[in-house]
Length: 190
Image: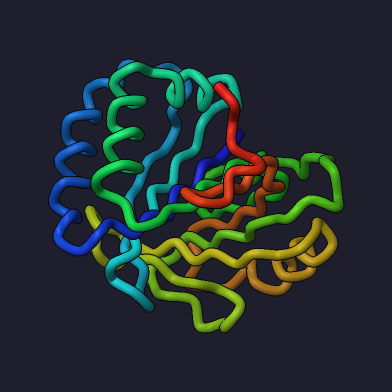
């Protein structure tokens, strides 16, 4: 399972345009194989920042979506017209705990890559390591993200928090790409 985390800050007055692109792309996205989960969230600390969190079966599915011509047009419009800044992180799920479904076995990956620990909960995280985002479509649902420098730090945090009673699910992702509007070193070249 692979995840994509797209944090975006639209230019002032452009939030409506972002959601217009979202609505226009919804049927296009529905035709793409491999999408398992998609939710949009608003940052609690800054309501001008949005998070689009997606789970895909594999990285090839993400690449297929990234290369879609209609999606490419929206990406270009975002960069040139609507976004003040954005950050995209892509990674493989390496740890997973769920109260509703079977948890995945740990996946072995490079240990020196940055990791994200994500809590899926019905309340915002109280731990200061996490930035909390509330669902745009389902108020009262939260995704809480903590950035860690490596696998060891991610496992330590995951082990400390993944059984909290307010959690529906917890996961850790080994980040393979991390880039933004201005920092492009890890951005795909195609």
